[in-house]
Length: 270
Image (cartoon, rainbow, N blue to C red):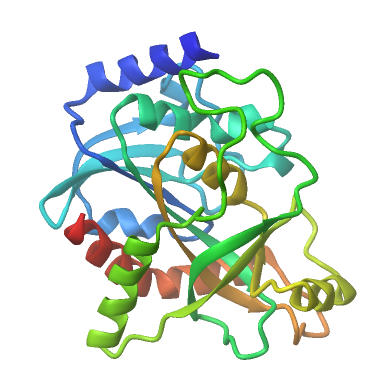
């Protein structure tokens, strides 16, 4: 594993001039965020050694290196999901590579269903904590001490200082930014009505099929994490025809500008 991680990190560094300290992972429908990036390099996932390839609509499958607010960043335009058949090792492999490239800060985004009665479709939710209901963990198996400790602390999985930067920006700009707990499930089916109610009961404010494994691995490697969910459907008021992936993508695209504003404010302060 270490050999593959280092080989991939060296390949990307050789192909680019990346010297930044921040990486961004964009969720479903949020790929237009790269329009705000002053692009310096673009690599297709299929051209990067050992990288999986995105198979889901709304995930372009490109690694972008460029600048936001004068800061060089690395952007994943699309991620990998456990439900696609990738292993947890594959899903989190890019995060490992970014750490080897010198990345210290990880910004993650996702499209999520709202399980909080006060949330509306199109809202942003800053993730302050998460609940792992994947039924597995990306750290299962032999631990590589070079990457992190056997039993990493997850009590502060989302960096409080980065959260306060976003909170302050939202207040200063009269910007609606909800806060809450993200619940990670495997998918790919949308949740049942009973499952949405259950997730609300156990303290979940939003639910999705990603993010949690990446955040666990980032904490394992002592990276600072900041996360935002775009509430793309209301799980507590499901329409008669049910939820759809198209609906998720449509709302995510509309919310992209708001996400860009929050991420830019955090990046500028780093």
